[in-house]
Length: 485
Ligand code: SF4
Ligand code: SF4
Image: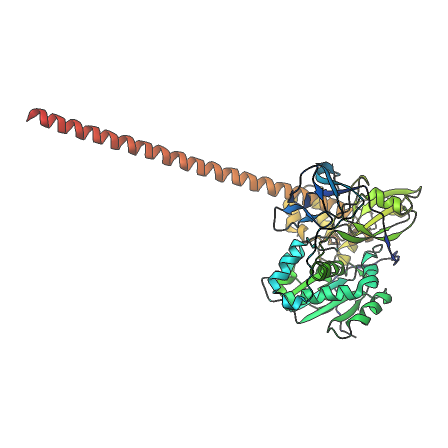
């Protein structure tokens, strides 16, 4: 039994996981790919309308180092590049590549690597980047960037401890492809040259542990189960539980010798290296009482959500809200007319009874329960007070940006105050303010440079005129001298 530690706060939640067999879904007629990946990180189309594409072919290239290339998940023709609603709480539309599939699922040639140990670590990183592999735990951070640590890494943690109460896609993936996940983990351990590799699992799902124990016997990988206290699956919380090391706020795990990757990411790394396959599919959980049949499905990235809901028998009559992600950290969608992205791990259809707890909020009674459960050790009641009264500087003073939006404070608040909602809004306002300030600064700098250039030009003009005048005066003097002589 490995020694374990406890992070501050957290809550025990009732689990609704249904670890099912992974179901396959027929190819949709359209695949939709938003070009916006993370905030402000766009990919640029490398295809044009009317062009035929193959499964695995790059259709958009990253414009930013925190974006990944996008690959077509099936063969077909680029129908258009046009605005469509994307997975965003505001329900905004943005540019998407839309592929009309042709049903052939014809694949682009792949380049498998039979022995990764014969490749350089840089060559493997490049392959992972080219395959578009991103964190499949929900953040979609480019995996190759995370594997390019500037500091030595001693421990690689593969996170299979998804502690959101409804999400079971990682557990299903482990049960179906434990061997491949271990291969992906070993590849990443080799790239990072990490001494230790740990696969962390929830202690409530013994079958996943068994599946991994059977394939890791000779690999030197530790399989460790952790208690299902939410949010143990958070990167920093998991590191603390497993090692006792507390990663400070605004500090990255890599700065302390740790890299965390999701089990789905490990599987995608295996596919990218050993099979030469780009990331075009993932497993997602479709669940909640608002959908007729809960399933874990292997889906093509770009599949329309409404098509997948139909695959699960459609909505039940009591459906009230569709959430992308889990019940704790997910975002409510304004429509199901959007597509699955690399970050989509769960679609949760909630009913009226699920939402009965969203009672009218009452004034804060200063009980302090929110602070007791906050894993970031913040004072949510203070943050709420300042965010509600738009005292954004105070919010920053109370470390608003350290809030991981886990929702623990919301869950325990006896006054039913939607705390996270107000934190998200305040963060949004601060980000806009910061952007405006940066733009204003840039404009000021540009104006200053322009002014300096104008003054310089003016001075040069005067100097030139003076020089010219001096030459003329000199010539005149010489002429006068000649005349006199
Ligand atoms: S949502 Fe933020 S403030 Fe609330 S408990 Fe989580 S980290 Fe703390
Ligand atoms: S839990 Fe709710 S009522 Fe209690 S201090 Fe926090 S915000 Fe106020």
